[in-house]
Length: 479
Ligand SMILES: [Zn+2]
Image (cartoon, rainbow, N blue to C red; front, side):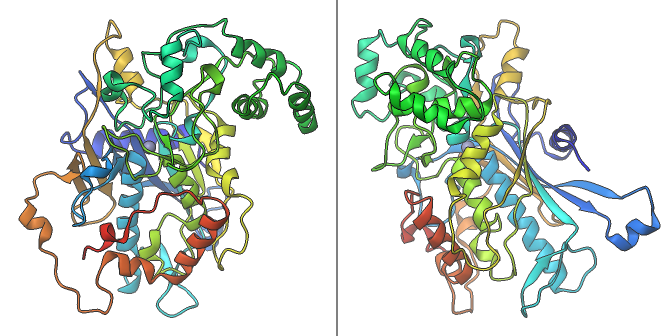
């Protein structure tokens, strides 16, 4: 019905032809991230019968987002006029919600062509059965999904950590939450790209790697017991961090290959929870943890994109507000990632497996078995593409500060923000909301009133995502 390359190609073309220049990176010095939602619609059975042998399937980009930034805690505002999280995935999801609102309006006003039909409960709508949505991102999402085993040292875009650098090691373990170091902060700040920093040094003969290889070689793929036995008998050699990576390597089919290191994420573990070991090589991260996005200077209060995808995979991507009008949550049926470091198994762990055990969700909510696929097509404005486009490969590149949101809606489909603020909008304009004449007034009240959604979220938090950073009510009291 569709292929990963087809979805990626469709999104890249949409980016090139439908998005304005304003908000796109300057390819001489900037890069960005892209995410989108693609609607896949197969013709209803009746029509399909009329076109025997020619099953009509249409694919259409209905929402798109670009962006790399996430604001720190101290820059958050209680007036609802700044976007905290402008990573492409989150912008695209918000654009998709605008699209859903428009589609609900079409259905409610009895117009043709809505994706929704009346539900069995009055005032609620359901998605037509032959429509599904694919989530596309040009890169592996930040956070847990980005901690990918690496088999060759040259895979690491930067260099490996040296155990032989005592200063580095002690700084890593001292509780300083900036493993990158202040001088490199600007390079990784607020970006979703999750690679190691230049301060790290190469030591391929690091004993950690040798132990890893030795133990890894003893695995028999497909024999779960084998790894546990191995780990137990060799516990003097293996730490928790290594065990996690080994499990992952086994699942990834890397056993036999040399697991030299892991790709790193700039997303930091949630405070008060288990933290990364930040040891050299494969032991740098712990996996399966909730993380907040990296920010400039201060911590952000925005969860990593891996965590958000895991949440959407249980609660749906419509959010709390739209659940007032929907009979069922709207889920993505597949996630397609563009050409970049990627692991199917790590994606599964981050997005599905962390929540797979939960039970007692309200009616209609389920942990989805979302499909994961990677495309071979690279985004032209990705960091890697921009970097390789420069002859010497050493140009100083920065993440683009602007974020573009696009929705398939007739009115104002585009919205460009810069570092979280709307471009070209005065503060006066932002504050001039109409007073609502309903009982519910604030954004927080509307969200809270979506009973089944809040119940599902409570269940999910209590059983799987307990450390999720909850922003205080103050930040949601705008109208
Ligand atoms: Zn992200």
